[in-house]
Image (cartoon, rainbow, N blue to C red; front, side):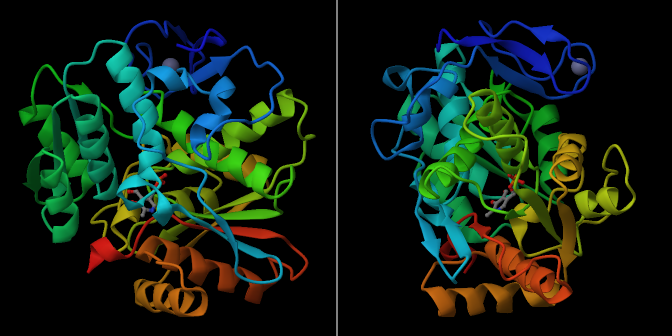
Length: 367
Ligand SMILES: Cc1ncc(COP(=O)(O)O)c(C=O)c1O
Ligand SMILES: [Zn+2]
């Protein structure tokens, strides 16, 4: 483990937890745990992967379960518009980042098997990293998940269960029926996937010549990426890399499942479960994110916003952006593009703003 890792602290109640053993959520209140470091000055170095930020990661690269994830290109799509193309990761999505860290830590701390419910991409990533770690994987997916996601998991040797409903139902199914001895790497139900996702912010900073954009447009499901980047900005400030200024974070959801958008509009402290979640941007179909309250804090603190796009706009927006850029845009990336256009039209984004939009995964698996 990284000797600078000082502890785990509950995001909600601040209860401390021991990082030398496998932890899930806070033993006092059931909320997610944050990873804390004694931050030392460093210069990113090493391979073009997320492991170039090893001083702010929980485990040394030598111990890591890695498939060369991260350091995805930041492509210019307009004079001041950039697309962070996460489709270039192993298994074709940004889920590779989180799973590399979660599986590395779980293995190092003695896990013998891994499970997770997933909207699709997380399952594929877990299946691949489990294979790389030599650990058996069981995943549960909604039964309407496109075939490519399911076949991908089986290709890597994972056991796949299809469950009616959303990722929330898949999670409940696993709790009741999943293997007893397996470690659960569900979004924000263990501390380390966020550590993988936060490297997206470190990369943007490095790729924009040690500066941050004015706004970051992020399609939000469980919210690991939002939480991770917000955490990374705090670390960068403590490292002396930036001041108190922050990129405005924008959470994009689909109208058929928008708990973060609803909570933000209501100025609520936490999100409420979304009844009958529906969207074909499957990664956004997360009706009750456990980290919803942290997403809301990240949006408020950065003076960001949250908006839902109409289902009918998502696929055409993905196609439009793909045709305009040559990037393999997934529906979630399409939602982010539809939202970006709305924000320019409303004046919330100004032509002078430097904007980073996330294409969180490949579009190929949805067909
Ligand atoms: C392609 C894609 N985009 C976005 C998301 C949402 O990610 P997060 O949990 O970081 O909000 C997912 C999650 O499944 C996804 O697969
Ligand atoms: Zn707590």
